[in-house]
Image 1 (cartoon, one colour):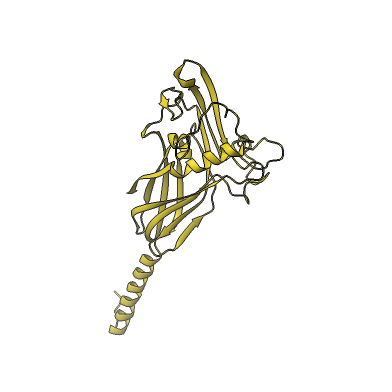
Image 2: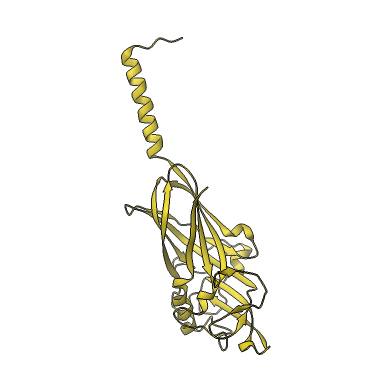
Amino acid sequence: MKNYTLPSLILLALSILLFTRCTKDDGSGTVTIQLDHTVAGTALDLEQIKYASAAGHTYSVVNLKYYISEIRLTDKNGFIVSRGNINLYDIQDPSSSRIELTNIPDGDYTQLSFVFGLNEIINVDGGLPNTVDNINMEWPIPGDQGYHYMKFEGRYDSLNTGTLRSYNIHTGATKGNQNYLEISLPINALALRDNDWTINLQMDLNEWLQNPTIFDFVGQEMIMMNQAAQEIIKANGSTVFSIASVEKT
């Protein structure tokens, strides 16, 4: 057994204390964003024509795809942790509902921010990896570049008369206008201490259609070149997202 002198023991104790402090101060964890989707607060069931729009139609959701990018977490001191990853959600792929932000420094986080869609730097021809998923999100209108921000598609019973029609709410940059959204949401009680947390982020699809302006499917079957329709959807998007809960995992 090795014998330690008193000075050696003091130095050893100080080294342990400093190591512990550095480990604590330099701690980090993973924050997972779990995406969930509702319609007027009720669970989303695909292909069921049962949801009421403010314009008076009953509608279904058949397809939903969208990009979330430039995710940022802000702590109580204003320190911002930014993640530039680009995430494509596809309702047909359950794994795409989880976005993992790794190596987030310890702190008390009070705000989640992100871009819904893609900014003008990313949203250009060839701006994303040439995968099948990204190719399927390309913006097809000549003269416009980049990708859809969102494809929100389904069918509706026109004014509940039994006449079924399709709708396609496709958002993106058009006619030189950038239509992506900057979303910022308050977070309560996310105290990262070398552990992991989950933010349950909820999208209410009905809000795209009603707040502050009622969006009517009729006459809006193709909105890719319709900047007025794009602006309605963009403005309505400010109330689409909410944080349902924040949990230590």
